[in-house]
Image (cartoon, rainbow, N blue to C red; front, side, top):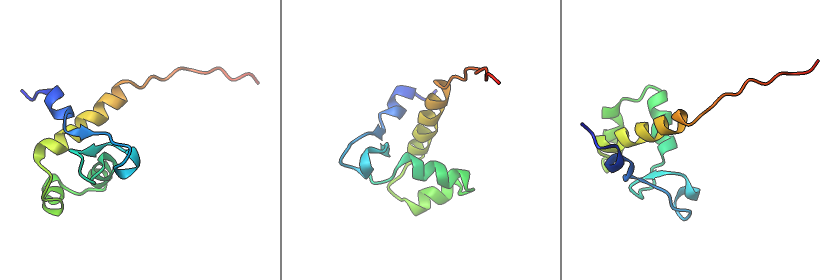
Length: 82
């Protein structure tokens, strides 16, 4: 089983790198870049070829980070007065 804490250690936040957006291991590769690529149909194999400094565990960390953000979302019904 993959250790989630170890995976999330790969995500770094530094206000001096990429405007403080979350990156992989301090590299200038943001989670946003990776998620947009995956959402656009780029395969993990293509990502790893395009960014040789990335590892499979980095992609897993990005996805886990996104899951944790979505997990925290809550939707509250709002009644609109007419």
